Image: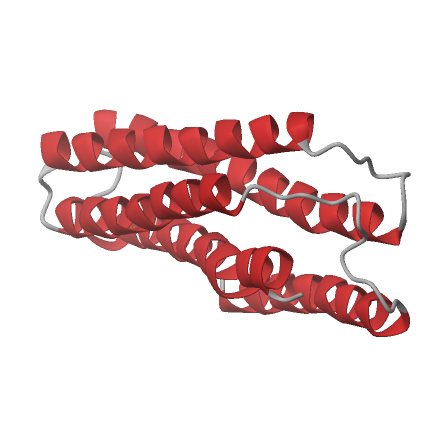
Length: 172
């Protein structure tokens, strides 16, 4: 999992390098037609942060073989992750610019789109963990699988919270 996450970090690093390179070449960044809803993105970010806490609690519960508690935490995490995605899609539908409008639009949708794909993958993985908890599949050494999925989820959250969100919504 560590090697996979390192490769994912390199993947996103390339996108950040592209963003800052494009930003360095334009006198006005973002373009004048870009009006992002920072409050909406902040609410979405809070849901994503809370989901990370819920995943952490779920993994702790799995390690203690507290199956019902783990399912509850996982369900809450999945709900928060889905709300994050819905808020993001709402933003995409109301941005007023597209991927083909200008370089900013291209990099904006690339960064947020790839993050959204990672969130979707994480939600699918969390659903898999819920299924495993229902069958009590995560016992003893097998709990490492739930931990690995938890690491992936925390990584996706960190990429958004520490990288994409501040870059897009606060770096002008």
